[in-house]
Image (cartoon, rainbow, N blue to C red; front, side):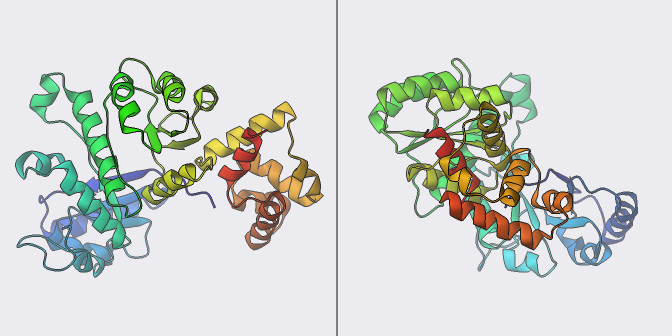
Length: 344
């Protein structure tokens, strides 16, 4: 299953609308945005308007979001709102870490991470804001602030996972190389775009001193040269930053267990690359002509729905064939298919 999520456009109305004004805006958006399918649209009205706006956008392509949520599901502090209260209004998304709350309410990365964990636990989706204040921007600290907030959010996600522990976070490759040989982590999350030496060079140097440490690239880059340069440098997996949190946590555990987790798009590029080189797995000979057809379409980036349409089959039948392919290749995910290629 392709877990890559769609882009989200969320409108945060702060507290600037009465219930009547919120309803007028919601109804207008419902008409104006009815044909939009490429992105998920979320409206986040004031808490006082959630009930009425929820009814107004019913049966539309617009989803409802909240402007904040307490980390406590029961016993939330005065003025806060808990997950159970939001779900009564069919809320699906929650904005966390808004710049105004960071600045005026002094919300920390640690608190935002706790709230993000509570949002996930309630089966809602967090929209975590990162951003600098005007003073920080004018002082030229924008990139530093954003990097600190993103690292803090990731560290918080890991800390809230019962099977994982964050033992360090560093703002540059040079800083990481100074400390990691003493820390000796099992897994390192590495970005590519770093100040000083880039993440790919950092991986290369890190593997020289810590050959048993597994590196998982977590980046925005989708270009083939970045992917293969990272893998050649010694990275064990490659995820895009838009990967859902659960997929990231699973990927960390998978790479620690010796796997090669990759975002679906990246896995397809790698499979396609090796197919172009003519490097086939011996197990591929066991596949039926139909299964080979499906694998070819997968490697070209086709979704299950597109494959079903191309081959005039149902999605259920495609899924059955996919399970057959994985069974014959002795794998359970696209990432493991790629790992087999890479071990040749």
